Length: 226
Ligand code: NI
Ligand code: MN
Image (tube, rainbow, N blue to C red; front, side):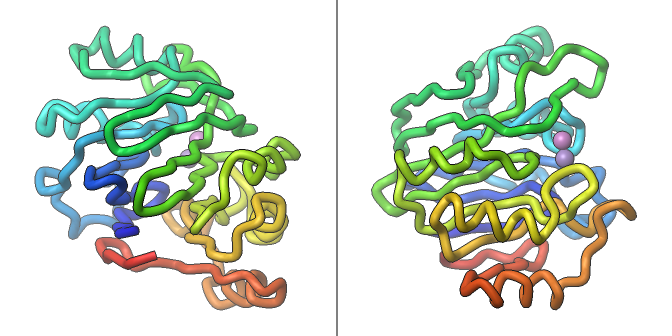
């Protein structure tokens, strides 16, 4: 699958011929200054939870592209109130067939308040299955035993996990998560953006390598085949 990193926990995957954009937080990210959000294509925008560092550019990109926003029920209502009508509400445990493939929502252990103080519902992770591949994006989360459910539903080609610690799993817990989801190809996100989550890249890659797992740290703006 084609994977493009936009910094922090924002990325896009081409699944089933559609551009799926996740957790757009780009224009406020000092490290992603070179990215023009007006050029990012999106057929769908998936939001894992309500925090500003995951939804900040969601409204403007949804307005420009007309992309369908897939998120939890509370964020769906919040978006509808802000004039974004093309939304699809889901919640943990739920699965839906879209025209690019299926989305199944998993538990994430985190919080989800929206930037204006509105209640943001529960945070989620997603398993996306399309004809060209299957992957898991955990969203912001602690290591949680619920991850052991993921391989019961999906054989993953790769997974996108936070590794920055402080607000989410750090690299050691993310290695454990990779084992629990039975995936040996991990793309790290949610690191370096703020002082609290700056990491040593080599240490992170080596920590995974010791357990026979590949950690990819993709340059911001770069597209890879995974
Ligand atoms: Ni968060
Ligand atoms: Mn976050």
